[in-house]
Image (tube, rainbow, N blue to C red):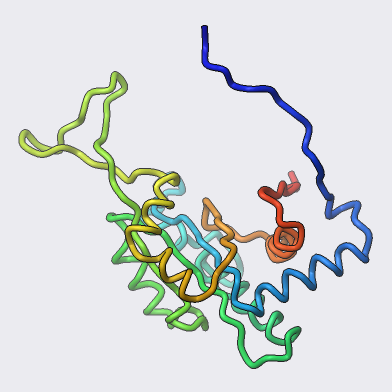
Length: 219
């Protein structure tokens, strides 16, 4: 007999940003902005992969996606995060709000990623609010489960994937850094993209204390 995978059950409750009343949207926005102003929110982007499939040899976040401005994904991330912090500060009537950004790199792109951000003065973000940490590695396996060798005397290793973020946050002391800052919520992005819906989606998630948000993307 196969493993018991459990039963599929309907959600206890859900809200739709499309169908929500303006009153609900305003309440979500206020709760989210307050959490941001309190320094309770951090963003974490998983950027350990290279842009090989895009025909780009560097980190995917440094890829020029073809915008007239020539802005990279990392730059878009930084600028939108900076603006979100400014809006939260304005809403709370304070001078500045800190919204830390944690960037998971890999052994192959950690140095290049850090250099890129420093060379661009962190795109206007405070240097102390941009934290880099590297994901772990696991032995590479063949399709039939055998360990691959880099050489006759050395095992080949590869990044341990997106699931390695939890161990990497702990082993790099990034988790401890979040605790010191008072961060209570982490928004994780598995790919270095930041859609227009993300700021509102982030505030909706905070206000409703929900575990997942589904975004409807255009064709």
